[in-house]
Image (tube, rainbow, N blue to C red):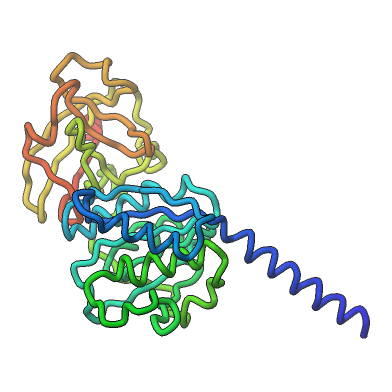
Length: 303
């Protein structure tokens, strides 16, 4: 009997320690609010009313207004580089106040994302995996006195819940009821190799330089065994309509081609990308990004 009691006490201690370890007091904010007014500061103020020990950071607040897809991409781009237990708040919420659910997703690696379930979790759920999803119980996890506010859930629900979770005021289990391990997703062209043709999405532009990034990762590209100098033919599509086709050498650096000439390369996320050396490929060929943009790529020697 004593051994059983000791076992359960030990297990309880381990669970408490694990729970505390999972909450590292870091909160990272993302929104489409911009920094022209006090919205971002208000969210951080609410977080600090929960605990002034929290470490508050910004992912970005320059998501284009209502652009759920870009919010989804920035999460996937950023989440893996933060420590286990980090809590992210992502507020791009054109449906604020409607029936869309407010949720916290826990990834398999132990990150938490507090957001409306409106497609924002499309990419990070696929790449990082879903450990569990809980709906925020606003009867408990909502800023006191904000019950009549319907248009600023980022401040009243998401920042407040995230801060309570990060500070250890609540456990993940106290966020609210468990939901099925699935989220609302936006349709897009997933990266595939069909015969000798690579197909993928243009999730984002390297906006400062006009480079075009795809979701085709290095491991998929490697199945074609390309060598530096091989010519890749890429066709860009918007809503399945061909926008442009160009040929570019697969290159290790931008300097491998003359100024103004195209190249194919692996970006900082080890994904196949296309550029013009010291010029904007996106502007030159009128290419955009988002769930409705796609590419097809083939090695010229396979044609």
